[in-house]
Amino acid sequence: MTTLNVIDPARMTVEERRSEVASILALGLIRLRTAPEPTPEEREKADLGFSLPQRVHTNPASRVRNAVREALLAKQKGV
Image (cartoon, rainbow, N blue to C red; front, top):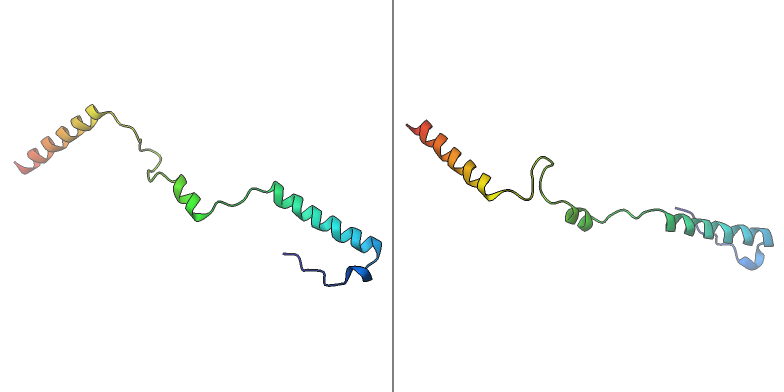
């Protein structure tokens, strides 16, 4: 962070004042052009809670088949 200039502008030369104004404007332009960092709330909203290989939408029939398959495997292991 830049330190503040505490010199009275009346005691500064024209070149010093011009340099001060130019540096303030340059810092303002840099701030305008840089992307802000997302807040923690924004980062949490972007996360859907799924790892990459999983899908959000599934076919209901495949869920039924998987449930039946798991039930049959559990029954076979229990026998």
